[in-house]
Image: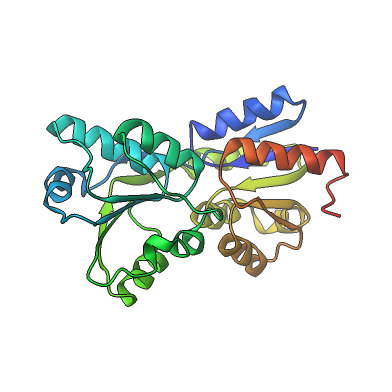
Length: 254
């Protein structure tokens, strides 16, 4: 059993190392890196101007890290009169550490899970800031707007794709031993699928694919994957635990 890990660095290499410590062989496939987003220069002005009771949403630890660095450079603290919502445990933990604020998180780590939180049950005229990459969580923003909120998207980071350097590496992979692919976002799944040539599509479709949400599960199904495991988390620990369970049960969910 060899696993291909499709996620950004440094999480990609960290997951590969964690799997190696558990005796599982994995190949890193980091498709992208990150740079500061276009909205960071205005974040230090936007946050202090928000009225009491506004809601801040972070879609990833990366969104928190880039936003916090920008605020530090301007000498601005995170507001203490707003609600904080993180997509998952890791994002919440890192946000609490830097903001010194209480952070809510859903049981289900995706947009649907966040929208089900009581905080979002009545957001009429509320100001909501979504800290994200150059795209993402559009469904969440649209739903909140439909509920009456005023939504501000804040691009805290942007993606830099690295497709070409990986093409030659993919050719040399030991495909006869690769049984599982871990993909942590829909965009990465789309680009990874493009990396595989038409002659290798059959091999790829025979692999089990691990995804973090129902939305990406549906995307994988549409691409022709038959064996899909939804982890409901992008945290490395959750991915490792799932892969260990699958390795001990012969890659069966039964």
